[in-house]
Image (cartoon, rainbow, N blue to C red; front, side, top):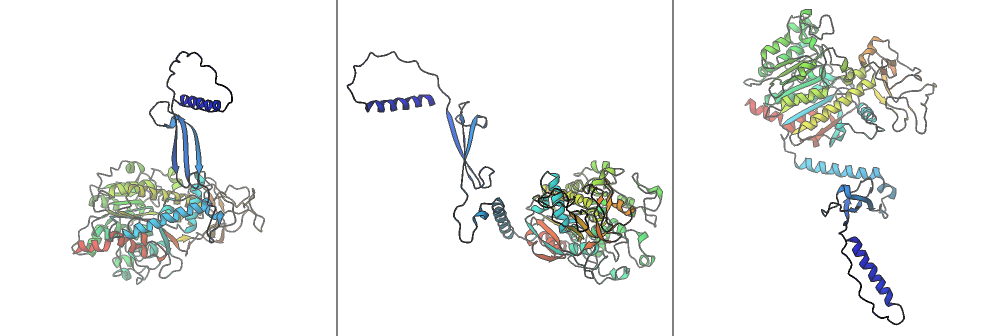
Length: 615
């Protein structure tokens, strides 16, 4: 077909040209024989497709042209028939207003920021239009213990570098949440806080003192009787009263300060089992934190007359020692100590829990966890370690195996969402904090990356329409990102400045790392050691050291510290709050830490729903 058309055009041109010649016409010749018909040709097709801004071939948008032959005669240009592709791109802007700079508006950073700004605007408009109280059927509070701003930044870069990027451009899962703000972490009596007071503020809406759990600032720390009458109600307890499913997950001991603040009332965070409580406090009626967890259901019912609750559906973490008698006969099969239990009252609280909930599942190892049937299980009590669970990097070394934070989060949601009224879940990554205390940045960042993956999984398993997810930290650490390393420099490495290939030297002639601590145990080169706590077996080595021949990117490297201390300390800086889902738009600006409770209450209408069930 194409050839036939071209022949007609050629003949026409030839005819036009002949008319222009001078001279007489010749005589007509004899008629020639008719030509034979040719076979049909293959049609040529050209298509055009509009392309949006940001395309790698046309950053400012334009049109894509695809050409080829319709080999299968279907009238379309299929992908395998395309023989040539070209682009006609929209030009960059050539005229600008007086307030604009041409280099800005044609720059990819500028264009990307415009796009993000528009997305943010649309997110705000949508959130503020659809802001009904109580729209969140489910609320999940993620707490990265010790996850200060510098920890988030360094973990973001490390995750990106593990993906093959330079790192700085990467985003952790919660970096992409549409709303964020800051939280002021101080306790009522302390400029630099601890986890007990900070978590109490987040889950009760009331800031309180250092070292106390679930009680207000009128308590005298360590004084049992002053806690009585000053107990606070937590978001988890309100959710339980409202008829929702409730759960607690932590990679620390489940009786440790952060998880304990959701369910316990104690004048001392260290009263994890009865052996930790002074006899005077026992005589005054104070109960240890492990006991309060096992008897959460009846304790809550005793505080609110006439109410009937069904107790916690999911408890997963470490801390088995606080639930078992100090008797080797009660050791678990994966006990690390010769006598695993700490309790001096000869009570096995794991057996007491099983007797209370005979259809529930008590777990202590990976095999039991893997075999859990989430649709048929009504309650889960899992204690995967005698003390804290393993660091994420060290999990492979656990005696009987233990699940990751992501795996626990996934399975917890699968159990909790069996309740049609919704659920409240608290998830703590407790060992970020512990690795920082040990001065091991690699351990802290590795657990932060796992924390971000658990958040991403929870986001995938829930719906933004009915689930509020808040991600925050209880406090930060004296952990810094410093020097002038060039873009893409290994975040765990030595500082190499822009334009250089060799590590920079400080005024003392020695190289130094990008990451460091203001105080703590200091430099240690433990090679491939994945247990951050191994540093406590070593002497304190604060101050400067020659690290010229040391691979500082290994898991076992512990950064230098200025001030020698037996353990690195918390910081008093603000920490981030990140949110998505119903009510998330209220996360903005700089807030008292206690505001987090009120956002969860608004989104889930927890107080009103609980009061309705009480009346």
